[in-house]
Image 1 (tube, helix red, strand yellow):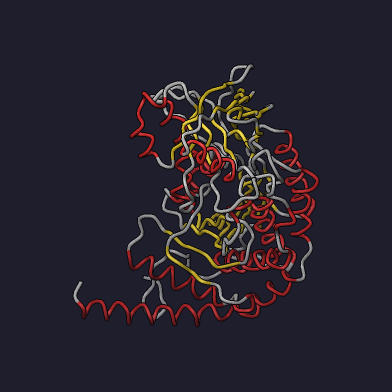
Image 2 (cartoon, rainbow, N blue to C red):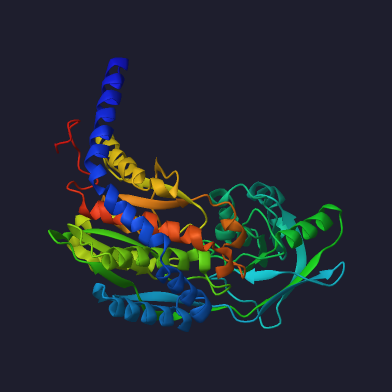
Length: 469
């Protein structure tokens, strides 16, 4: 593109932003009303506390998850949300069972551990074997089968951000099994630890034997590897009664405010109702479920009915299957393509940062126009402080909709300590600041309402003068 064309596009985009801001300024009073109500609201926090304190962990296939589904659906109906349904979803069932890990040489010491989701168990007597420690897959490859066969591989990979480091949790077992390892212990995927192990799913490859896998604390992984590097023989004993059962019946939970003019067009927002079987699943993701649900409920309680349908969905089975998101897409059928936007909150409830937007398959101009609208909506949230909008967003549960071209919006926080609590016994309600949580409800309510009510759809292209193309 020539420099002159770049200047023209920048100028046009500036006009679009100005037009969007002027058009959406009509929502300033309503947005302020929503924000004031959210910051005084107790209903969202009460929902969050119920999930955490009265129900607790909600692993797919567990009674805890089914209690959460039953309670949420009944409460949505009691509060007056419309078209409350619980479409069926078949989910995988993994049972942790009793488990333990010990260093037995050069001395006896209990290791802080959590079996990885989906892992096979050990024989009843456990596995006792010499440990071999590596800090990367490259080190494992260099050791080869002769050094790994019959041993327990300990991955002591350093934290390099979640996206890179989680590969050791998801791929570590199969990569070690190809060299003949009997089991793996993976350093927990976290930047900091108080000897707290972090669980999460692993993925077995079809071309490798399935071997037991568990996460251990940072401190224990470092100790084992210090000993190995010092030339000391290290032996560990791992016992796990983990097992996978037949799929079980579960459900998504859906409620909405039907649109007054275009009920067939939908803005959906939500979080995932399942959690791991440790802690309370507070940050991940009771906070997302309670905030999105209360955002829609708040719009209703204020007597607002947008042009389009505003829907909340509490998706099931995000943690170890993603079946809830896929089932929602199937349940929606042809209406999937009539979704105006899909918003997911699944990054915890630390201080609000903003929202990220992706529109698969959209032209550059279409994305520019959508970003201008998002920035204008973010400006309506000014009483909450700076709210940024960035390119690139979405979520696991809304990804099936995004593959249909639906704009995906990911909710962003500062994420300062999220991965210290992620998938641990420490993911509990006390880690959530009530005021910050109310700000999330406010931002989601403003975003959802304006997207559902503004004259144009989010992804419609517009002329710089403000008219639609």
